[in-house]
Image (cartoon, rainbow, N blue to C red):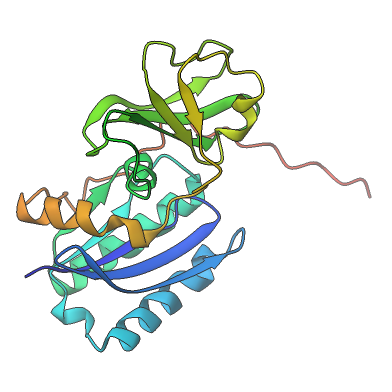
Length: 224
């Protein structure tokens, strides 16, 4: 049996879920920009209390590890590492775009194109088969009219796909209205498979998969 706590803080959503053998037991979600640092531990406590399990009874902790929000990813991974280190539990890291893809049930012959907004006309995107096998890895893409022409038929979704829909010339693409963001509730089967395969991460060296370097802005100086 696997009892896995799943965390996703890769976007403005802060979500926590508990799965047993890949099946959802309970979940909690707060959708508020900048809520991760204050909400995550509270959501974890609520999920475990609702399910009637103690953290010590977990088999592993899974976290959506990027791409996404720089701050959100750091908070999620640090929290997951802290639980794993304190309780001697294995850490599972899942690609954020694969988590988003797992929320969709496409036609068997279609490829999945989850896309997360990365500002302007840039998106984080990857391509998966209907059974979530990777066809094209997670990358940052600057969209144009002919992006992803080599993949067909294909289903695009996520909050990065909306800004491409009007200019897309792809002859065999379907745009879905939702889902727009990944959530921890969709991590169960992926985390359970990783647990069975013992695909665990090093608690010391593992870092978020940012895909892009952080580009901060200099604070403006206020005149006296």
